Image (cartoon, rainbow, N blue to C red; front, side, top):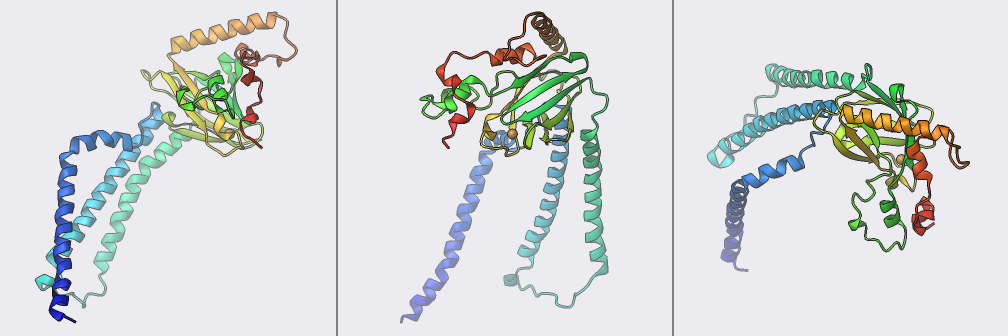
Length: 329
Ligand SMILES: [Cu+2]
C-alpha cells in the first residue's frame, strides 16, 4: 500500500470542504443579490393579514413574536458563532474545565426568558379575551352545520331571513364521477356556494355556531376565526370586517365530518352597511310576498325565498343525481 498516496487522499477532504464553503458563500451572495425577489416573496410566505379587527390583532401579535424570536436567534447564534470562531482549537484555545457552576449565570438565563414570556403573554391574553368577547354585537346569525351544507338564520332586526348554503352547481357537476368537466375550468372549484352568507362591514357580527348532526367547523381564513360546530352546543365567535374590505371571502368546513366534508364550502359576501340594509329589505320584501302566496308542499314553512330558489330543480340531468353520488361506494 502506498502510504504517501493515502496521506495525500487524507488531505483532499480539506480542499473539498473549502470548495464547498466557497460554493455556499457564492449561493448566499446570489440569494442576497436576489433580495428584492425574496422581499416580494415574504408576504406570500407570511401569515395573511386578513380583513377583520381580530385578524389584524392576531397578525400584530404574530409579527411581534416573530421579531422577538429573530432577536433571540441573532443573539444566541451570534454568541455561538463568535465563540466557535474565536476560541477554536486551531487557535490554541484550551477549554476551561474548572467552571462547573455559576449562580449568577443561572439567574440571568432564567429571568430573561421569563421576562420575555411575560411580555409576550400580556398582548396574547388581551387578544384572546377580545376574541371571546361577543357582547355589543350589531347583528347575530345562527350558523348550523349539516352533512354537507350550512344553514344561516338571521336574528334580531334581520330575523326571518334564513337559508341553506350548499355547494354551487358548477362545482357539484364537475365533482361528479364521469362528469367530463375539467375542475380547473370551474371558477372557485369546491369553494363556491349557491347562497353566500351576507354580512355588513364595520359591524360586529356575532355568529352562533352549532350542528344538526356531526361535528363541523366554520372557518374563514381571511377573518382569522374558526369555531367547531358541535351538536347540542352553541359556540360563539364574532367578525367585524374593516370598512373598505367589502367583497367575497371563502372558507371551508375544518372538521372531518364525513365523505362530503370537502364539499361544504363557506362563502361570505361582505357588503357596505347601506348595501346590506338594501339586501335585508329585499329579502324581507320577498319573504312577505312569499308568505302571501300559497306555499308549495315541498317547501318548509317560513323558509326564506333564497332557500326556495335553491330547492327549485336545476335543468341539468346531473343536478338530479344526489350529492353523495360523486363517490363510488
Ligand atoms: Cu363539515
